Image (cartoon, rainbow, N blue to C red; front, side, top):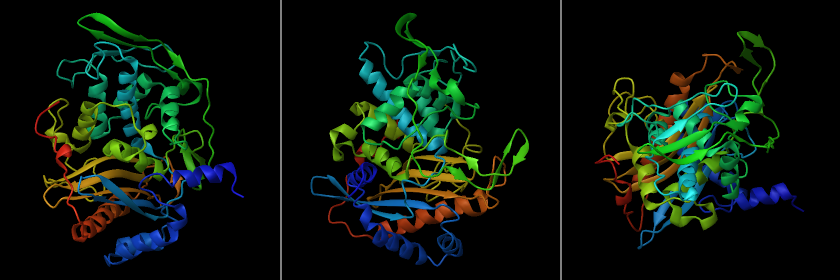
Length: 421
């Protein structure tokens, strides 16, 4: 008889687009054959040592009916919801969506994603933010923070969204949507740890000098326990400049399974195709706003403005493009969120070709840390990580170009890059 946890996992894999986990072996065979058919030495090497590289890939084909309604068929390689990987910046997409949802849920007249936002400090190591030189009016806002998160994966912008939504609201909102394995419990790149991560800053919103909404310092009394079998990785890590010769314990860090990653992306890209309880409370304009900045390239943005040398087209587009510095084709767009830290590379993407009417979803993680010692700069991003992501994306993309479809998709709702919102 299945226990409660097994039943929950089984029900999760019955969500739209993910099929039965019992089909994993046959699905793994499909992706393995696809990658082997490329006759590429790097892909073959990673396939041979996929356990070492902690590879997980979830590829979802999308087919439309005559009314443009999508259906999904998924293939996996090494996907295991129980296996820990550090999600890094990929948690920012769910946080951005939750921030828009919270604005809508508050139902306060004049409070929108563009309303000027002031973040104060009221607890240890909290910081203030009352101006933003990269916005058109010089002021922060939820919308402007989301732009920076999606365009270049700005860590401070994510931290401000985390503080606005609040740790408790953020996690409970995602759990209610069925993503029960998700734990987003800390800010990024500020040494957020212990009790202080559970406190989020007081925030106020003003319009024309008038207070619209005041959010006091918040504390989350709930503790989200790590439920995975093991979150200890590697053989050592550096702490305060000294090597600790034991596995690094990630149990107090963020987590989001590969399946939850793609399920959240699916609910944003295809809200009409998932059950109502899995959708975010977003308006049509919210969705368009997200699509715009998920797919936009850094140099296409005016506010914030980014130079194309430091922020090249593929700066946050790992799948299909790796770390290429050349311009991306205008007819190909990746609506995605990437992450990289501790040797992990992750990309969670909905990729389209507007000319050939191709669309698919691809989510992948690889760990490139040969020494398996963390908190160093000795990661093989350039030699293994980025090339793997590029070649994986290309293999799936080329398969999609050849794959027969009864009905070509109408992708017009994603062509939203011509004017600023």
